Length: 131
Image (cartoon, rainbow, N blue to C red; front, side, top):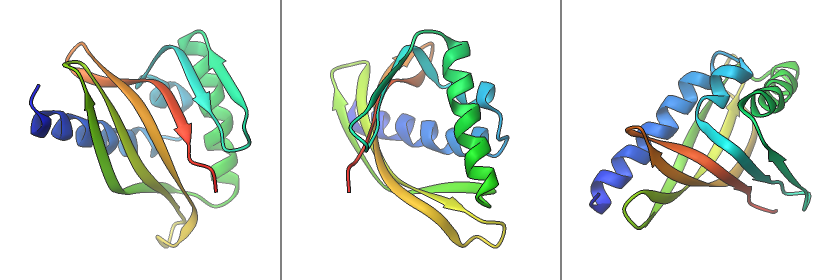
């Protein structure tokens, strides 16, 4: 893939992630992740999810917490893409969780290691940016 094609596919990944997030359904969100999936958190902790069900349970807890804090949707901004060979890339975005009135409930920056599988990018690792 050429760099502009990679960037277009990564943008599609993030745009589709927003749609999946709107469902507040961990199973729907987890469909964008490979197994195993490795998550590095800002608190210097690491989690490995070895199955789609584990990943779905993790995301269900996350979105339930977001919803309880008033989040109703999300958006991304400041996307950067680094192609890694023919089938992988690192996609980085700033996420903003939004209340019903579109005010920002929370924001953070996160990078995703992506692999092109079956015609789309999927996550195999993600890293929350500290501070």
